[in-house]
Length: 295
Image (cartoon, rainbow, N blue to C red; front, side, top):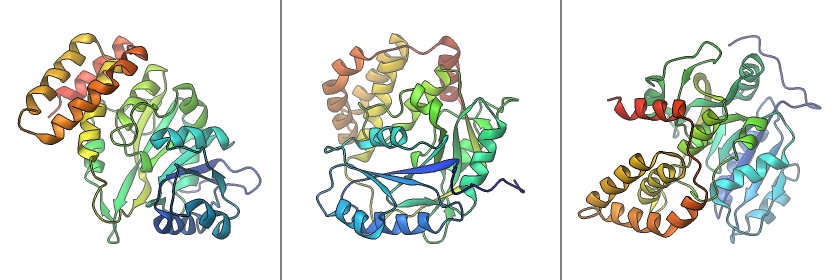
């Protein structure tokens, strides 16, 4: 998209929320890169209970950043906390190892301005120092949900949180990232909740985020993702689908320690999920099943 409207310094359209925990060095690099963007976005950092001097370093090296210290680990729900604190109409998310390409935030704001039903925009992600495409890009590009006439790209019910921009009002209306799920596969539930509220979720590959993870994924991520897939079913889907997913995970757990860990964690959190259970409309469930049936 060319000829985009630049973000005025006194009335910025897009802010950035960064969640972090005990990743001071990586976070400071991300903040340096965000500070160098031509859009000069306002940035809020939510420190999820770091013990490595993260808060002190942010205050010293980036005094213009809005530092939020909730006093405990909010995990992915820290993004909701940060979005509530920023006043911009659109919110981009970064992790402490990700940032945005120059001009991407202005282009994202233009897309939101032009598409009033758009609630969340999923950007393309380039990974590592060589900026190779994240495999998720092709998955989103091939979404079987197609493109609706009032949205800027193919509809999706999944995305990468550190490559997403939301309409703040839509995000908060949908409840943000669910506090029960933590980090790891938390995105699907938000996409489902936005759709249930009538907002669109679309993949826009012309808008680009960068992700440069350091080292291996944190331990237990695979188990958390499988746990959260099951909890999402119990939170939002018909009983039959929730039971079927539970049975599949139970079968896998006989041989797979990650599945066993996921099942145990899901069982521990199930009472809380049932207390918050709120089935999505049939039209959203049909879209979930269409995705599940696609190769």
